[in-house]
Amino acid sequence: MYNKVTFLDDEPEREWRLEYDSGTNIYKPTPWVRYENSGKWKTVTFYISDIYLRNEQKANMDFRIYNGGEYDVTVNFVRIIKAD
Image: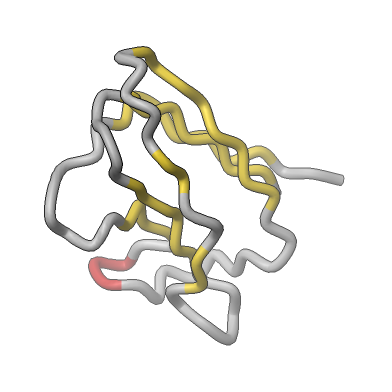
């Protein structure tokens, strides 16, 4: 599956990542996405071959956007695209 996240790149020196349920790790991390402070909307694509959609994360979620909890991540759109 492909997971696309559109976020506002409005911070200097910060980062976030996607954490998803892989079936063996309910918070498996993707690589970090670093802000460039461009002030523009950017879309990041993650290819996730082992996502397991079973609502095991907190609040019955399958994935989350994680930044350590110190600040907000402004997200406009999240898409999951099934790959054949």
